Image (cartoon, rainbow, N blue to C red; front, side, top):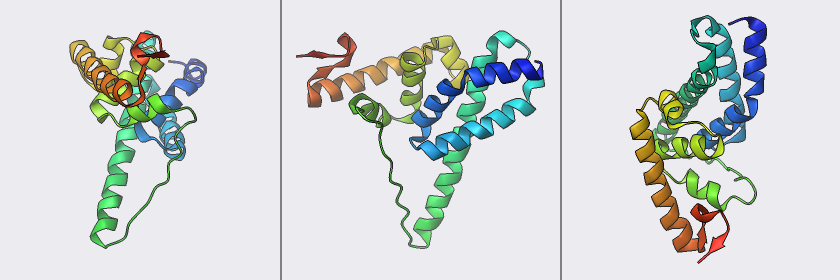
Length: 170
């Protein structure tokens, strides 16, 4: 992939990359850091992309891996702080009007990312599978499980059924 084509494609994905990183990390600064690192890694590895038609999936996979690396580093840091008796508190401001996003954030990692990529970013189950390292069938099952969990939480607690057009009250 040429340098110009890479820059054009990567910059065109900024919003998707940022939202995916934010969904995983739930912190604006961490999401921006992960995105920047993914951009650098993608740039350095652009020669390994064999099919430019798969650029988005390839690049999103780099971002997801970068986010997971950041989470692992943060977890090691939290464990160290716990061992020496210090508490680390991270204040996170959820996005405004975020009832659904808050419920999605409470989903386990293996369910949260497929839901966000499918419903918010428009990726297919096959593309999501390539990004998260799962088969399309596993992605379909995870999205279904996430919907069920969200339905129980949102309809049960809030009385809001997002599966019926986003605003129906029961």
